[in-house]
Amino acid sequence: MATDVKGLTSNEFNDWCPGCGDAGIVLAVKNAIMKANLNPNKTVIVSGIGCSSKLPHFVNVNGVHTLHGRAIPFAEGIKMANPDLNVLIDSGDGDTYGIGVGHFISAGRRNNDIKLFIHDNGVYSLTKGQASPTLPEGRKTKSLPEPNINGALNPLSLAIMSGYNFVARAQSYKVNELSDIMTKAIQHKGLALVDILQGCPTYNPEFTSAAWFNAHTKPLPDGYDGVVKDPSNREEVNQKKLQAINLLLNEDPDNMHVGIFFQNEDPDIFESRLQKRGMVPPLTQKIADDKGRPATDIQPVLESLKI
Ligand code: SF4
Ligand code: MG
Image (cartoon, rainbow, N blue to C red):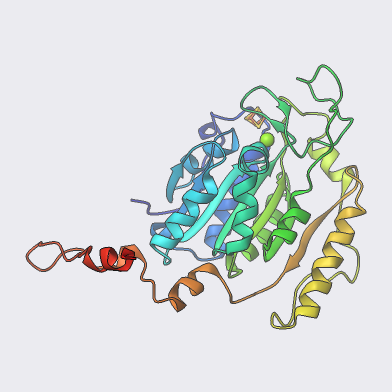
């Protein structure tokens, strides 16, 4: 059982290459868990498959290292079974925006109270650096024989259009800034995405070094405010969404913004919708009486299926 979220020494990150941005991200996750005052015993980190998905092994909270592209449905199931848990996802861009993109979109329609921290390095790094869905067209990384022939998916605008209510971008080598944004995502009630520009010095060193990120990212424009003040005001919600998407559409991949693009504390989260329908989370349902005899009865279910 998890008891703390103490820091690790660098030699404990021996699953990652030297200089990998994942090391900064794991520190930011730990800091955010502490800043948001989450109980480690009631916190779960879910991951898919990839270099980034090893992260749950390095944080002393509950963790589930699941299947390729399937972190989101696992996390949704955990949250619905026990809404008291704080459910975080740490996975990669290939895992989430490639094989798992259907789940990524559908999650926005539900708006569960879970947080996605996506390590975005433009490559499938665990399988030797093939182009991921976020690698811009024309970029050539170490494993590609020719520059990328495909256009890039923009995960932030896709998230906003899918229904995510907290959408932000940060980078892996600025741990304090990253952990501040993660903390805000955790404190936000509802589905949150933090897309993390992550350094992969092994397979995408040219476009993901700390120096490259520092030269090619900038804060949101002066006066930009992505936070919705009145979630019941559809006009304001749409105006803030359009503001964010307009900024993202006009971004140059060599000159990206970091910060919170959109936030809307919409109380209509999936757990509330289930509660309104009278559905009781499985973990709180009584399954046996005091003598251990089953308290479940399938007769009402059978009755409900009669035509
Ligand atoms: Fe990190 Fe890239 Fe090495 Fe994977 S291959 S551990 S992402 S540096
Ligand atoms: Mg990747």
